[in-house]
Length: 344
Image 1 (tube, rainbow, N blue to C red):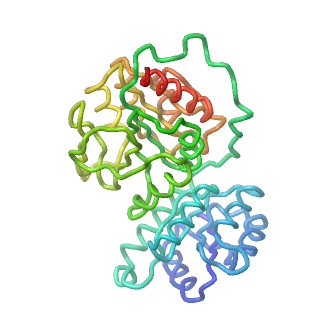
Image 2: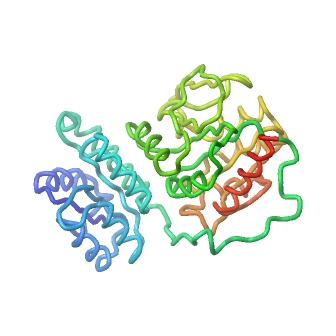
């Protein structure tokens, strides 16, 4: 039985969400809060397995409540956004930055006509979030250490692939904001994120880091900048000069996925490519990272101490797919060194 704390100021929405969860014996609602202050207090008192929280609430909104809960009593938090409007999506992304596991769209308006489909998706997200084992992230400044002698790519790097999932947004901000501007090496980014949030996430990431971040388009020329894949499309290299965005196959769990991204870097660039696997639940990216390492590429996983969820990086370590295991500060320094060599 998964114990859920429901946080929602709307009586109507609370009733809808209550009905969705009460129809599944997997879940039990242990408490209902009407605002952020109540959410923080009840999270401390009830210690639920997962929190389902609205973003807009009186007294304390969902971003502030997420920040307080993660500070006082870390618990997986699923944020529910009423709309996909810019302001709401920005708040949802700030909640991810504050420690929420994921952001989903609340059942409202036309979505209520497809409540069965929405209900299944909501329950799947809550079930997945409840399995996340949280631990406080150690600040990178406390992890700084000297890299091993010779721990630098010997070949110039022409392209970098990055893959992350749960806990990725704040790590991406930390790494990308520390990079020089302009950063000349193209970066291909896979971030597992709720469909509909991709464009806003790219804009938000650009605003937070000062880097050029855009959505990749099939057939576009490989060029400087950070290029994200839309949800439902893989981000690959068609060849050494252009991108390809094939659609997901029905059997695939993740799309976009880090595995085909890293595999395509191995195929088209080999030793002149780097792959970086960051925090996330599951094992996406590990097999592709191994292919890149075997092709002579530079491969990096985020270390356990700095990872929000050490699932994907651990899978990379278990496969011995990484040349280096680093915290975000060290990853940024390594990427800066790659960029310096590319400028020579």
